[in-house]
Amino acid sequence: MSTIDYDLFSEIIFTNDTIFNNIDINNAKIISCSCKTAGLNKNIKLSFDREKICDYLNKILEVIIQNLMYKRKEEYIKREELIKIYGENFSIASQLEDIIRDLKKENANVLYGFRELIVLELREFIYNYENCYGDSRDIKYNLDYCNQYFLIVNYLGFYEYYENHTYDPKHFALKPDSIYDFANAIKK
Image (tube, rainbow, N blue to C red):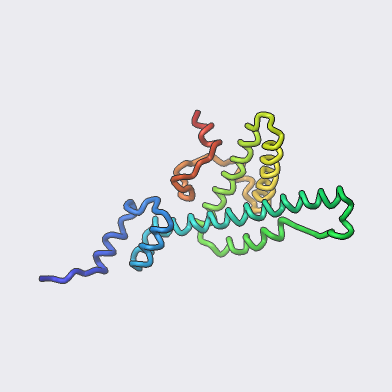
């Protein structure tokens, strides 16, 4: 009886990219830990890149939230004339520099995917702002986020990409469960 060459067997399995299309990060981690050949599969690598993209997007959202909270605090301090006691400087640009420094170390997939998702987030907030139907809280909320995402898109140098952007539902950075309301409105 002949023995099985497990290296050859795993190479045959993991060179088939279509089997691992849209694999979620948890399964990708398990598979890549169990077999080193799995880490060479294009779709498994993309799964790790998608996770990094989402991490960077979450960091940007955290910066935006902190900035909006600071602005509200600053308005309160000015209104209550406490600026002399609690005055401080806060810059969204200084927080973005850390994220940009880390992004520059990433591969092209992460950079392009991040650019795509940050532009999609901006377009989503613009869509939500345009469709608030007079609810003042929704208008303010979406306008605040539109302004912050717009500033970040400009700061990162993605404005031209934003201006010429067309939605691609099959973009590699989008997870199968990604939902963008503005994209559904385009289809109608």
